[in-house]
Length: 558
Image (cartoon, rainbow, N blue to C red; front, side, top):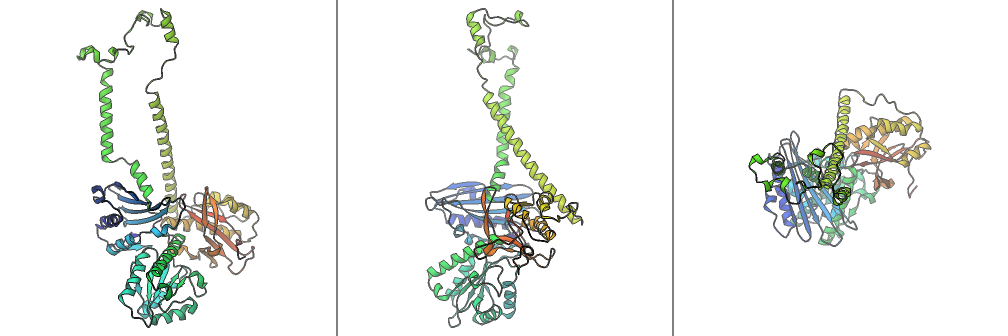
């Protein structure tokens, strides 16, 4: 979510204040004074722990808040909010909820809908470039209804719709209005709530059919990808009798919340390129503050002042002989009869007594600074490794910038690498042409060995689109034009959710859900003419991972 262009200059401060007010309502004790001044702080209670970090500079101001709640044994849910202001760009808000319980449940139950709605009520926001909606939208005119119907069946729609119908024989009182407002607040940022008067329910039934419509006080959840040919079960309908009491309303609201969260995760949302709390906290830890730099400077100055002069003192300095290192009792600095005399320097000295010989044969005690030196070397090695990793990241960013510059000038940085014409060339071509952009799993590489799809060039163009246009769009936070028909490849090629064909795979030792695919040849299962490229987006490496291609996967129904 972004601040709108007409937001007040103090909107970022207001956003932080709203977040702290929301946080304070769920805590038993008061927050420390540092928190109210929007400074870094930490606060711990029996069932909650919160922490805020901040990075301030001339070019940006990052503030991140994290709350961990442990209401039940073994259950821990973490909610974080990031407010990022960068010079020349609108302020961006990121909201994340993670379930870190021993037995994970439904993290969406902890989604801070009240916080998001509170921010949207005081600060104008944009979501994926469109006005953020936090209140129900009443479809009371023909023009509004036509616009709603167009959006409802738009194949590129990525925002879920919750439609609440008004019962014809029941007056629309304040209680019903409060129910709709409560549903809209619970779905703030996840879905848009529409209110359908009785006269407009007939328009909806005429457009999509009675089985897919909603009327007589019922609620319906329309997921993205809806059309008049959709399966009615995929777009849940809740009848009026299930919403008769408060328990039914709460259950319906939670169900809509979960459905909306699943769809928003599947279709992507505008917070992808917003730094999360961990990233801001790590950067704040690595960036020393003014106080830390001052303390480090004083410590170095004290160290230099206490050690350096001692090596250059002489009796003429007026210092007491007992304060000099060579006069410390037991230090061994004063010579005795067993030591080498000045006259014996340059020749092999021999001890004059047996005790002296045994002393020389003893293994010298380790220097007191040896352990510190080893620790310094380890720290230096870690710093060099971290610097190398940062340099690698910067180089990759630089390559991406140069690649984008070449494309903006009308060139193609990958033009020197031609598309493959045989399946045994596709994997090598992908590794070379789409390195760090598209990765193939071992299963996908094996499937290419026995592929029957005849149009290898079309499959390669689809992979190229995933590594260029699609990946660039994901890095920008997602865009509606990434979903639906891909006309620049072919009019018959679509990028859509897998639906019932979704499956899981293991990637980088983690279980991942493969829930998107590029498809061609929708009316046939002939492996020679049917193309399916099943993939998922890996946020950690910022790459598209292809898990299966080029045939249609078999599921429980096929």
